[in-house]
Each structure stands twice: as C-alpha cells, then as structure tokens.
Length: 351
Image 1 (spheres, helix red, strand yellow):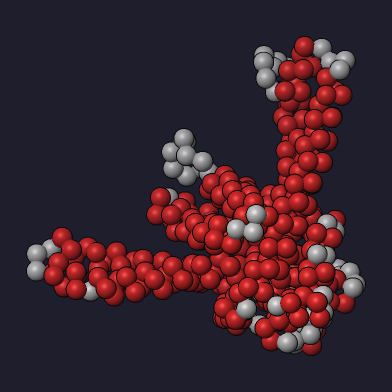
Image 2: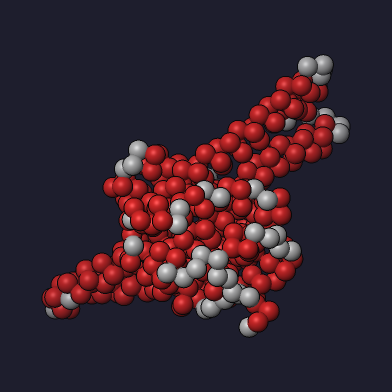
C-alpha cells in the first residue's frame, strides 16, 4: 500500500475529483438529472402524510454521506462499514414499505441518473486520462448507447437480492401449515445461507456502486463485465480501495459543503438586500407568507423558483461529484488491481 501511495502518487491524482466535477457542463448535466429524477420521484403515491420517494431517497443519501464523511474523518473503519450496510439495506426496506411506489418511480429515477451520470463519467474520464475536454452532447450519446447496461449494472444485483428475499418469504409461508412446518424448519438453514448471500451482495454492491457506471464508460463493455470487475476490485484490494475512497469522501464532503454554503449565502444575501426598502406587502412576496392578493402569489412563486434553483445547483454539483469521483476511483482501482495504465480509455469510434 505504501509503495502504491509513494510510487505513482495515485492519491494526488485522486484529489483532482472536485475540479473534474466543477466543470459547468457537468454541473448542468447533474442539474438536469436531479431535476428530472425529482419530478418523477415527487409524483404522489400513497397517503399524503408520507414523504415522496424523491424526498425519502434524498434524505437517506444525505444522511449516508454525512455520517460516512464523519466516520472517514475520524478514521472509524467500523463505522464506515456499518453505515454502508445500513445504506445497502435501505432500498430493500423502501421496497417492503412502499412496493408499488418504489418499483414505479425509483426505476425511472435510476434510469435518468444513469443516463446523465454516464455522460458525466465519460467526460471526467476523458479529461482525467488525456487532459482534454469533450463535447457533452457526444458524451450523452455514448451514455445513451450504454444505458441498458448501466441500468442493468445498477439494479440487477438488487433484483437478485429481491428474488432471494421472495424465496425465503415463500418458504416462511409454510411454517404455519401443520406437517409442512417441519419441512420449513429443516430448510431454514438453507434460508440463512441465502440470506447471507443476499447481505454479501448488498454490501459488495454498495461499495462498488460509485464505480459501476464509470466502468461502462471507461471500458465500453456490458453490465455483467462491469459488475464483476468492480466487485473483484473491492475484494482484491479492500484496504487500498478504502484509502482512496476515504480521500474522495472527505473531499466530497468539503467541496459539496462549500458549494452549499455559497448557495445559501447567495440566497440569504439576495433576500436580505431585497428586504431593506421593501414594504410589508413586499416582504410577504419575498417570504411567500401572509395575505397574498392580486399578482402577489405569482410573484411569490417566481421568487420561490429562483430560490429553489440554488438548491438545484448544489444537487447538480453533488451528482457531478459522485460520478466524477467514481470514475477516478475506478481508474485508480484498475491500476492497483490489474496494473493497467490509468490513462487507458475505450474509444467508441473504434468499436
């Protein structure tokens, strides 16, 4: 590990991830993905007191990165591991709690994020490997070409875990039937083995998740190859990968925090400045509260849209960073595990 750190200084190249994510075209791609996915996930399904799928996923992802960054800063490996386990369990829990909403809304959200995330990964890989900027429409076309594989790589392992859960559930149904309950109890050992397999798949999938779409954008292969490559890298050099992932996680927490602080400061400064000479009715328009009459509701909605736009910029950068950092992590992991040049990149024009 020390030789890897000092020999090629890969960790210094890892620190380029925030700069890769900060390119305007990649932030705009991230914003487009965030906006479309949020619109899909905000479709109401179920009771009105439940958060939408978009809200539930957003809050869980924010909690994961916040806790994981804290554990990484404190060098708490055990905490990072269990945070990854809890994060891996969340999709299954969401599926059990709200099956129809999760299937009908989460799948299109994943497809949208895979499309725009693939374009970000492709652009980041080109800049990282050859120090040149690509054309974002071309990157989006490459991502669209591999969209089926990207979606498959993201959801196929989760679908396999779902099948495992279904098999165990069917077996559990016989425990309430006389005579058959003996057979069910005998086969419970097999159920535990299946559950162990499911948990291991979830943990591996969570750890490999940032690298799955970048693997397709870097190698130009299919979903199966991307999954087996990323899983193999996680298992082959876990400590090496953990070190680089920790660097990227801390950099992500810092850079996203800075972008969020700038966005929040911009919003607060604009609101404070506009309120200095505003009348009471003007303040009501600014805040969207109080008795709004005539054209005031429309004005308040327009201002609310602009204030939401700053949140969209933060979300766009966060998505851009996730896929840019995943691309860097994949290229570094490939170099450490396979010895392949970190600058090797698939050329779709030759395939």
